[in-house]
Image 1 (cartoon, rainbow, N blue to C red):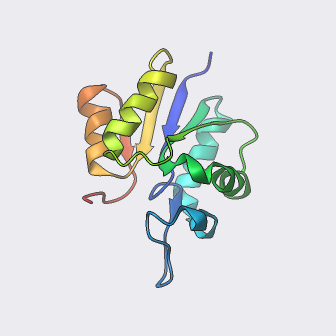
Image 2 (cartoon, one colour):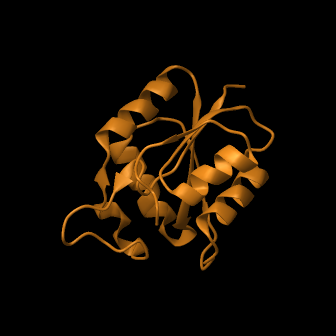
Length: 140
């Protein structure tokens, strides 16, 4: 079984840019997000090297279809997994992602994680001992 690369979406591969950018809670507008070319290039290279890409997102499950469409259009991987926050779950991102990890990925070998948010990066590194490549400033 290939090693897993865990990839966040918002602030990592997808960016909310411009004066008309959506708020983090406007899930009906996720299709408007801009791609982050540098991070997407890294994700593609890791997939091409044989690693399994798993998107682990704090996005609400209500935008799964739009998120899948966006990932296919902008990241362009033929094979990946996507795990998302349950609809209406307002808990901290670090808590949600830890539970998603425990439920779906704890039994798999993780090469690294790409994420942006400080609280989540700390969880990956300090609680799980994973290598986390922080792709942007994330003190929010």
